[in-house]
Amino acid sequence: MNVEEILARLIAFPSVVGAPNGAIVDWVREYCEAAGAEVTVLRGPEGDRSNLFVTIGARRARGYILSGHMDVVPAGEREWHSDPFVLRQDGARLHGRGTSDMKGFLACVLAAVPRLAAMNLPQPIHLAFSYDEEAGARGVPHLIAALPSLCEKPLGAIIGEPSRMEAVRAHKGKAAVRLEVIGRSGHSSRPELGLNAVHAMAGLVTQIVAYGQTLAIGPFDTDFAPPYSSLQVGVIAGGQSVNIIPDCCTADIEVRAVPGVSPRSLLEPVKTQLTALRDSGFEVAWHELSAYPG
Image 1 (cartoon, rainbow, N blue to C red):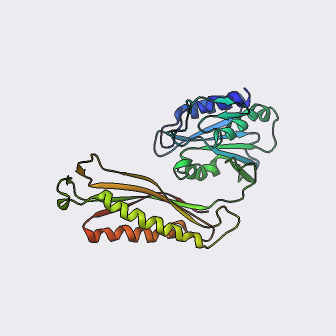
Image 2: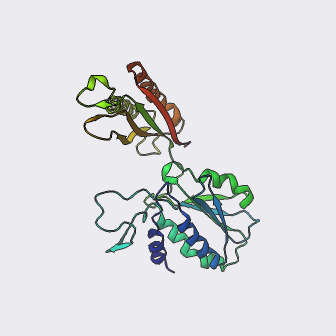
Image 3: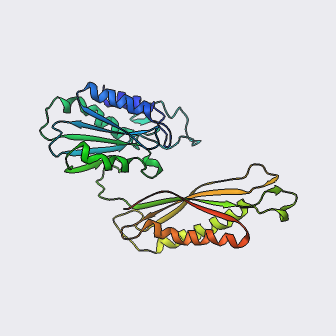
């Protein structure tokens, strides 16, 4: 199979982050085993998704890892004019969910597997494919923990994230949290009898956005674009009907921190603002979704 054929097969798997990924894992495993590679499937604690590790060449020598993730973000954007899980060619471009991030890289690597397996490599090439990267790299820690039993200490790793073909030596640290505000429900005709969680969250989000804008004043690291830490509110959910006072509202936010700044420390002012809602009678909760250093 050539790169385009492999990419079409990979795109056809709707391996959306947070969903079971057994189908794509099984296909990659069977493909690599057919080429003579050694494959280990590492089931994650969720029970319905797995990492995958492939060794080509001498296992007990030190080698390099080619690493990527099998999951993709959801494809709910209105800009899609075709099935996002069917590879489509438009001139010199290939379109489909994950063509760039990052099944294109996986396809390039897999296309080389038969040739690499035929070389009898004295130093191995390893493939490390993880799950749920798009949810804060939830799968790869389990894969990293298993590395000592899978191979000798690697000489290095190449992570095939889209970077416009420029070498990137590091990434920002990140932390993501879900804020939950719990009020008191009631009929919209008597707002004074309820506690509107959406209204409270709206005020909180306004404060959070204003705080996020202050991060642009530094500290700076010019190796990154933008050269400062950042904050985003990505998802807000709450309410069930326009005539019911919403008793619950959640907001998912993330911060990305330049080196030398702890992502969790950037969230402390947000936690303080959330906790202050208790003074108005609301209950609040703080759920960490993911965190990793830069």
